[in-house]
Image (cartoon, rainbow, N blue to C red; front, side, top):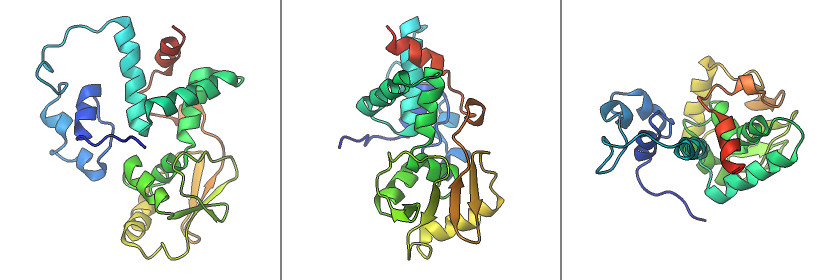
Length: 208
């Protein structure tokens, strides 16, 4: 499968905001967007005002990069949201939020979505007691997210379990430290998604 292999810091600079793609580094003075708060490339500091289409495109690219989704995957998510009853933009974000890799990240079991994706692929987690190694697996209300047998002792899990103790989780998620198990209490509502996203721009882009 195709994947992005260039510096992820360039993505943050291109979108003009921190996408938190490099875990702890994003909170330090080494963060690229703090050092160079302009788009990458030869003409990064001299770009003209974007068109309406350009604004819509950038919003779509920003969301796609936040969640680490390829273009084809993102379009499928949009088509799925568009077929369902409700507000298309909000349903799209709900689908992205309930991906297993994002849930692992939201629970604090990984420092970034990229790290969460790698842990899921290496079979670190279970859903309702069964190992799942598909990052795009969509969880449902009532699902439990646990650690696969023997994985609690691995270094990434040890540090995550220590860090999660003081972490405030989104209201739709819960984590039982005694069982090392998370619970999907509800599907995320729009107000639960605090990322600076204007999903209506994406809907307008795909409605052209």
